[in-house]
Structure formats: C-alpha cells, structure tokens
Length: 189
Image 1: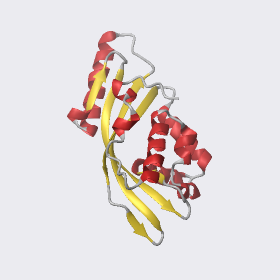
Image 2 (image 1 turned 60 degrees about the vertical axis):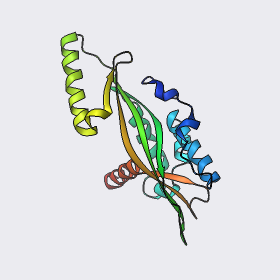
Image 3 (image 1 turned 135 degrees about the vertical axis):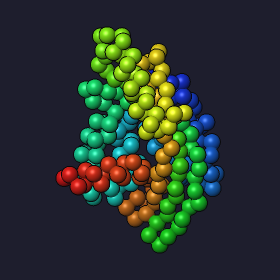
C-alpha cells in the first residue's frame, strides 16, 4: 500500500478524478476506475491485472512486478503517485483486431529521499539543486517542495491506451511510460 505522504490531492475522491469519463463506455469506465485505484494504492497485482497482457510476451509478469515495485521503493527514495485528473478520453477506434482508446491524464507524484544530510545548510543546498533539476525536466510550474512531508511533488502529463482485443477481452491499459520501460527490459534481457 502506498504511503500517500505527499499531498491532499492523494486523498481526493476517485469520482472527482474520473469526471471526464464518457457514459457511452461503462465497461471502460469501470476498468479505468479500477486501474486508477490500483495505481493510487500501489496495488501491484491490481496494476498488473489491468495492464495489457500482450506486454508479458516481451517481459515476464514477475519481472514486470519487480520493476514496478522498484519504481516505488528503493533504499534511497520513496515514491507515491496518484492520478490527479483525467484530461481527455479520445474517440474509440474499432478495428478488426480490437477496440482502442487514447486517454490523457495528469499524474501527481511525490518523491522523498529517505537519507538526509545532517548539516541543514547542505540539505538546503541539495533541495535547491533538486528543485532546479526537476524544474528543468518537468517545468517550473509543475514542481514544488512540500516541507511538511519533506517531499518533492510534481505533475506530469501522461498518455495511456485502453485496449480490448483477443488477448484482453476486458479493457486493459498500456501506459506510455510502462511501454518504454518494457522495451528497455526487453533489450537488456
């Protein structure tokens, strides 16, 4: 389970986050809500169950699970994430191979370093450095430091694809970022 240490946004009701769902697609909506809930609670098995199963032909499910866990937890950092908002849900594309839909969303993440500097001046310098680096990557307005939780919080615009086909008769999702990680793992293994 996630620690949800970062922000009051992490406690926002899922119904508010899903306000843009299209009533024409009730099955998609239900599965998407389950996927977002699994992400918000770091339910790794739930995330994997709702990830497009065709991806496991390239990288075995157990390796994917290990990499997802490593994304959230390692010896030096702790991450927490949540879907802040569904931005758009595209038009469903029906094809003889299946049905596909593009989903744009804003992801809220928080990162906290588990090891701290004993020297307050060094720690302040490190915070300034990290903020500059993260802002150069994610944009000035998308990064902030939350002192009460000692975490760096940031928004990211993301995209995923909903897929319903012969490998996935119920809607599953493929996150653009996860696809890139899978390709990296595929090349390494």
